[in-house]
Image (cartoon, rainbow, N blue to C red; front, side, top):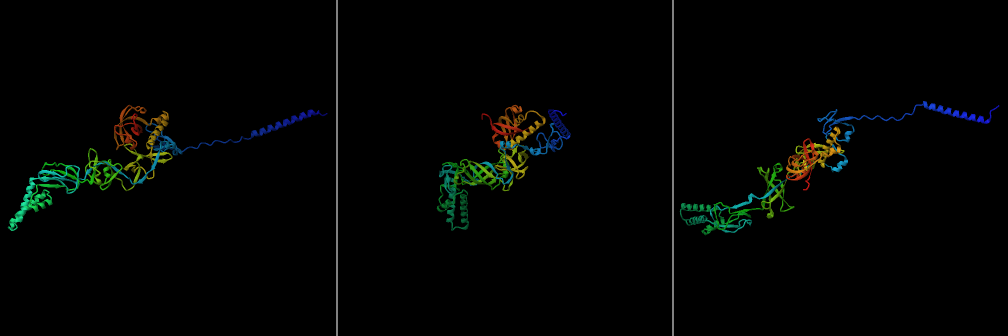
Length: 513
């Protein structure tokens, strides 16, 4: 007998459920036996190549193996790729933002003929060859003055004064008598005529030795009468620069009564510094300026370099000759002289502003690309107004820093200080950077432009814990020297370029000045 229909349905449902469960279990078992899918494995970091070890203080010193510097600090490793991102040993690297902020500007090292000039001061003096003194060669008295004031212009042959001399009158009479006697004894014997002629010639020579004019001698010969006075005339055209003659005065032989100077051409005697005299050549053209005529120049030429040196001023006198139309240049006038001293041959030059002069060495900063700058010590030669000859240290077409170079130089000291901080630990970098540039106020006691140094009596320096003292500083750039005159009250920024070498990088008037 068959089971009832509802029971059959229930059994069929249970069998289906069991089959489905068994299938799921089998599938699960098969999946469990398969290995899991491989997940991505991160790549191992590539080993960096060590290039060298650099000095922790930024000095141009490297080592292929680890070492310590004299202060006991470890040299820092430099890996491949880092050398391009940072400055090589002995270089300074600045970010583009800092370069723009500092206003860094460069200029190429080029070959050029130096348009050099030597500046000096001088004074106008009369041409000594154009000065004439009028001094009678006999004793007498000033009878009358035709030119009675100093400074009066006179022409050649113009009457100056008349003199009376008993000695002159006697000489004229002797000549007149001898000449008349020789004429009256034409019929006498040869011996008598010869004696009178010799006497007349001696009297005539005596008059000529006294500078009696030929016209007056001819008149004396013609008339036979001696003149009481003799007129002296000017032997040259010019200006009466000295007059000692006074009407009625007595004078002695050789006493100068008048001096006449031709000022149509004058001299300028310039005092050229000892270090510049080697560049001055006779015959060189000269430009001169006089305070009396602003904006106007006069042309002259070097005629003579004196063989002596003034020990007090360490200068050599140089004579310059020039025309003086209109007599505009007056003796004793002060003159500014510019003597060309350049060479026509081109030489390797850099702008003067590119040179950092510490007094003991001269350095330029060479651009190496990507914000890197390399200091180079250079040997200098001749200078012009804007450029200086470089004898050694740089090559043509290299670019040197001409603006903000002393700030980059200070930056190199800053990076050395930060390198020391990284190696040894210590104060925060901001505090370390702030301590690199120091400030002080004081008075300049002395300056040596040639050595590039100044002596400064300054107040306390808090950043260095210094008391007030007097000490020597180097000057970073010759342009700063102009503000560091003895006696000036100034505020200065300075850095320590190397141990014990303090360099002024900026100058301002002291507060309240």
